[in-house]
Image (cartoon, rainbow, N blue to C red; front, side, top):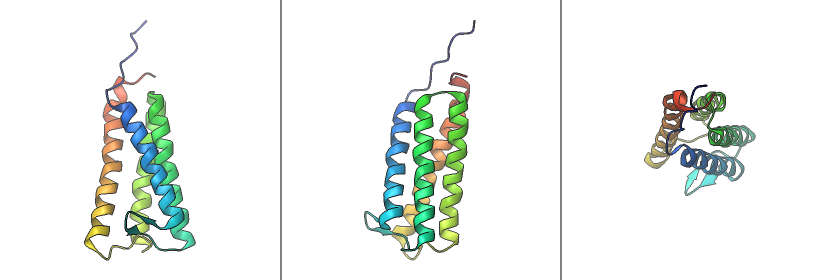
Length: 128
């Protein structure tokens, strides 16, 4: 019998962070504002923002399971999050009319991508 791999350190913290940031995304989808950043007050903006947030929360919850199958699904949800953010910009529901808004979308999307890359890198060390 093969030994059970040890999950990478920090995976629990990453999962909790994803759930927390996803909850903030859902809140932003409902209120159209978060720490001075805004989205358009339209049904499309709400739907996309909530969907992105739920994908992020789901990815975080799956990450907490620390298994390969859950991490693979989480990576897919994180990629959906990235595509959703790009869609929000492309559809004009996430204004990019100022440096602060642009910075937020670039950094926020970058964080999601780093989580996805970290999970991909951790796959061999996760239980099947």
